[in-house]
Length: 165
Image 1 (tube, helix red, strand yellow):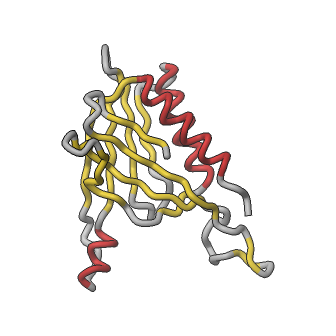
Image 2: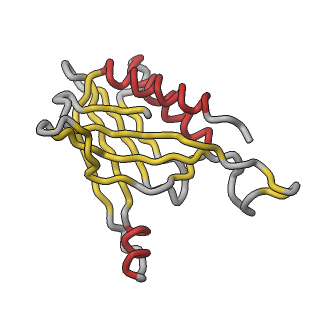
Image 3: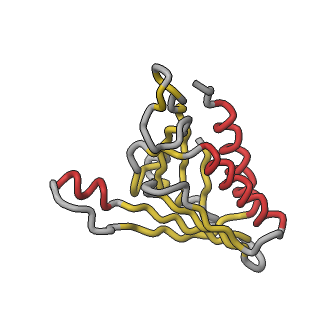
């Protein structure tokens, strides 16, 4: 699991990659019109409960299908911000993926402003049998540059460890 905590250690983004979609099944793409080999994962924004010393989710998205190249783009974008090559970076893995992350370098400590957007509309609509109305939530927090380094390295490591199918 790749985690990006805030500077107070009370909130974090957790992104986990668990599997990879098979590229072909019976000689045909798994889904017509959808890139094959997507990574299966989940994302959550969690808070640290000091009473029981456990991380608990504010919001945890169900299964996410992430294009493999999008995960690499997040890692590279984070590294570019850290190297000073860009003042910020905005990332959305692809159409229909209800997760977006924006990173911005700040002057002085802690060094990085993180914004995490989670689109909740599709799941809320599914629960009530209605239409998605664009319900979303945004979490904004500051983190240390070293934490972003650890997050990018952990995410790159997870992407390498998920086997090709």
